[in-house]
Amino acid sequence: MAEFPSKVSTRTSSPAQGAGTSVFALRPDLSFVRSNFGVLMLLQLVLGLLVWALIADTPYHLYPAYGWVMFVAVFLWLVTIVFFILYLFQLHMKLYMVPWPLVLMIFNVAATILYITAFITCSAAVDVTSLKGSRQYNQRAAASRKVTRDVGLSLSALSSEDLIVHGWAHPSHSPALNALIDSKPAAIGSV
Image 1 (cartoon, rainbow, N blue to C red):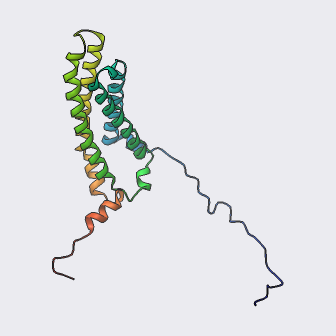
Image 2 (cartoon, helix red, strand yellow):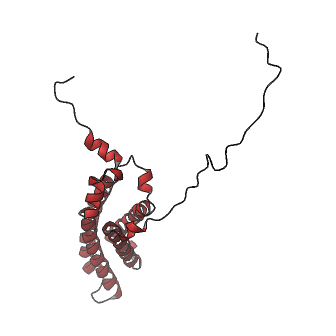
């Protein structure tokens, strides 16, 4: 059996000051807010807030059609807030394995489809659920117009040159997407 050494060094050392500790400071990227894509996202946030605020101010729970409009408006508004925060604080750069341009494109296509269904639902239900000229009629008609604008903003964001040029053309924005694009499939029959 091996004997335990009679002298054991128990000296400890502390890491150099500042080494190993990193302060994670979130700094907003104001150039994103000034970009076309940032402005479109801000407009989408403001108009999305207006849509659900106008619907929420009426007794929407009495009509299932407005429940759908409310769901679409609030859900897409919250997801837009998440994407806005990700881009404002450049957190998308820390999650480099996610192909953000593709995620944003899918989100904007889905948002456009959902906004179109909400617009059709809201427009069809305005005349049926309220008297013309009443306060509820005016709020629901305004919400319907705002949903139309949100559809336009979603389409604008989808075709925004910032999304296409910065996301697809610049390798620094999405390494995962570039790895996918750069991978060449093997020729058929080659081993």
